[in-house]
Image 1 (tube, rainbow, N blue to C red):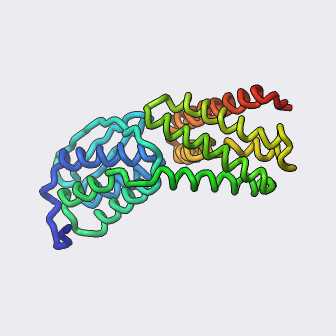
Image 2 (cartoon, helix red, strand yellow):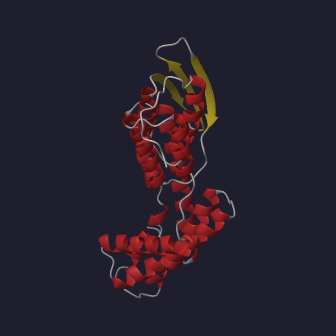
Image 3 (cartoon, rainbow, N blue to C red):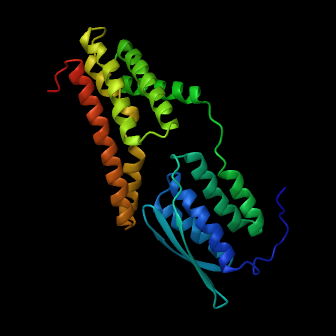
Length: 264
């Protein structure tokens, strides 16, 4: 149980706060936060302890300096960004933690305890995620004008591709290779609607069968970082997303070539 009584935060040193915020920042950026969110959250927590945070955000590292507003004291650390999957739930909970620290008189020790609970991966059923992703992609097919047969084909194509993605990522295979293989498998299954004339919207089924692989979040984050003048992170995120899109395209084209379906 976290205490909510009045707590004196003046005894928290710059070093203690810097160590905590370095870990906090690496997890926040690793789970898919934008640079501006990271700056605001870290600054909010530092201000709650009457300190100032100066942060330099790089694609793989974070350089953080904490300065005491009253004492001539500062501490600097460099931390490596956590290599974790995009997790909006963790992103939101870490942001709520920054507001809780700012609005509630909790100690740094209690904040560390809350942080330790947040970064523990939440349990999600792999099969539930698989079914929901397949249903969502089939819905995209319908939005683009696909008929019931196309939706069924897209569901199967997404199910097979996403299951392969989960399996290969669990075995630590390079994500770029995973994108190529998954796009290939999904496009082969998605092209059956055109090849065997199961329905009337075969091209829609083929086109939407690989939509689940489009790296939309990295593209959006890169645009946000560019707006707030974090150009290095913006460029790196854009290039990462572009590479994954190219891998998707390679797998899609390979599947179409195998099934002898013309691209133009």
